[in-house]
Image (cartoon, rainbow over all chains, first blue to last red; front, side, top):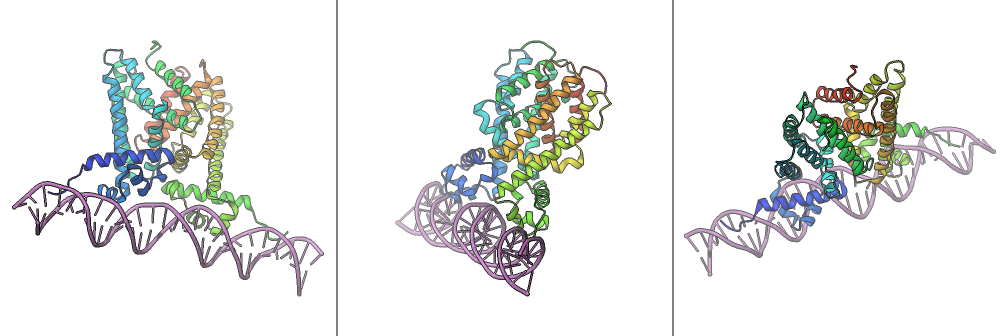
Length: 195
Length: 195
DNA sequence: ATCGTTCCGATGCAGGCGTATCGGAACGTC
DNA sequence: GACGTTCCGATACGCCTGCATCGGAACGAT
């Protein structure tokens, strides 16, 4: 068994490079050569890890999807004692990717979403992430509010968060405005109890 | 003055071709040659109409932006007598592009939005469209509801509509589900008066 | 009929793309 | 130390891209 290499680690490293590039110039700015250069590996190495470019993109999308949902759930377990309402607020602002330091992630996500509209494999991965988040929020809303239909409320919240992210990215809203909108919605959601 | 040609008409024709192609395979599937073929003109003609590819995309985006906002406002003036509430509902479902026959437009729009995240000229055009729509909705909401802050309510509605469109496109929601979410939000928006 | 201008179809160009190939370096095994 | 396998860097290939060029068709003015 000769010359073994940490394949999984390299794949993650490459996925990271994909995200950086997609953040800077969109998904069409992601070329194998640039990815290899950014990840500081040779193109041959990239080709060894992923048979095709699409395979690489799929992996990268899965990667960021997992990172985002992981952060949301982490945010939830990190504040178990507080009211379910504030937990919901934190989680929602988390997936809206409104903070400056999440901007890159948001751009990457948007790039993938757009590509997914014409690429079934990518769309499948996105659906999985959204389904997971929707279930999570529905449960949370069920606990925190007296909403008649937690499932619908979760869908609303998810779509609103995504829309706000988009509007911030293209500069139609400032992060502060988006946050105000989101807070307003959440407040209305679980009655008029203050946070 | 020799050989004159309907430039503006040709530009619109080309913009239409851009949209068709963007709908089918995303904005990166839009090449000058394909556009020319789809518009049934030669590449030379395309190059005469638009000095550069970006110029063409900008024009196309403006084109669809105008078409969408025009349709929304048309929907509004077409139903002046009804309550402002139902008018609001119609307009909102219109911009959410949920109907099957608007799916293409939605895909095109999403493609441009993603590209705009890394292309300031495109982002500027989008901002203009969104600003116009937001003002329109704010006015409508001011008339139809007792909302304390019509501006924020308009932003919410706009973001929600966009998010729903996206989620339908990638298959996370069915059009019917999205419509239910939107209706629920609207109902809650102007009190509990039935539509 | 001739000219002058406007238009455009065809073609060329340089560069970038994703992928395939392959010779040899690296390294566990014997 | 020699072997066998695994890996990968370099290079090549074919294709497609956006853009530039240009010869000539189209057509109003004279």
